[in-house]
Structures are given as C-alpha cells and as structure tokens.
Image (cartoon, rainbow, N blue to C red; front, side, top):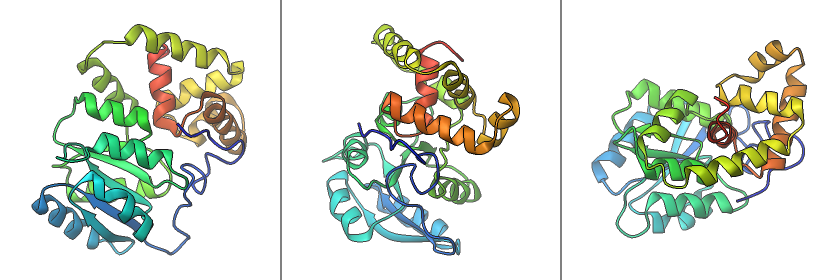
Length: 241
C-alpha cells in the first residue's frame, strides 16, 4: 500500500497521488463493467453533466491499466465481478501505482465482502448500480474533488454483514496504528471515522481547518493509509466508533 505524503495529503490535489482536475476542467471518468448496458447507462447519465467527461469504457479489469495510461482518468467506476480480472484485483493494482486515480466500486449488494476488501485496498467508496442518476453525478463530483463517498454508517453495516474471520488480528493492527498517533491525532482520527468534515472537526476540537488538514495528513502517513475511508475502517476495527 502506498505511503501518504508527509504534507498536504488531505488537499484535493494530493489525496491519491493524482491531481484533481484543474478548476474549470471536467472530471475525467473511466467506466469498467462487463455489462454493455450498464456501461451505456452510466455513460449516458454522466455524459449529461457538463462538468464530467467519460473518457473511456472497459469490459474487464485486465483492460484497466492500458485505459488508465491512455486516458488519465480522475475517477474509475469499477465493477467488482468480472470474468478475467475482477474489480478487487484491478483496484489493488491501480492504487499501488503512482499517480493513481480514485476508484469507486460498483456493486448490486450493500453487504459484500469484496466491497469491504476493495475499500481496504484504497477505493474511495462504492455505489449501488441502481443509484439514482442525480446521486451518481453528485458522487462522481465528490470523489473528483478528493472526498470519499462512504459514510461510517455504511462502513459499519458492511463490516457487520461480512465474515468476521480475522477480526481479532484486524483489531490488534488497528489498535497498534492508533497507538502510534499523538493524542490529538487520535481525536482527529476518531472524528474522521464519525464522518465529520474538516470544518466540523475544526469547530469541535477548537482548531483551524488548516491544522485539521495537517493532522489528517500525518495520520495517513503514520498509518500508511490512502484516504479517509481507510481511517474510518481503522477506527472501527479498533472499537472506537
């Protein structure tokens, strides 16, 4: 897993190692799904938004590296079940690369062990394939701005519905990671896990937004995490939510 940069990681330009689109530039999206009708529907919905451009489509995960290198998307919408290379493997490969686009997992199930594994691999969140068009567009905009789209409530539901195998080792690892943080950093990490925005954390903990961003950057770097979703998973695994 890639280590976060020591400074500015929480800024939109540094959240994943790939810069967010410059102001006024459309968000570039790659759609990966083995169902041609799903790809066509997603492309039509997203193509209707003036600030989003679908730069390519792929039918399987094995096509993703070439498509990403060719089209340089900001966001990849990734189906999780494909015949040759599944979405989990493709996500792990993408997130290990530098620079890396944000990955949003597409699924038909709320509770899916594969989805949880993809989130642990660094995906920014997940969307159900029947997500209303307006919510889909809003989610892509949010991820394109460097924000996750998975609430702590959904994270807890996912974890509660998948196999508990390895829960003890995950808790030990999470507690170890949190123990390596300062007291203030742990407070910020818990607030991130609770779904608080930087502005809300700043108000709650009596600090500036810039200071909150700096704390989040250090948390990501110290814990070797990619994004706020993974911070929430660590906090949950440690029993702090």
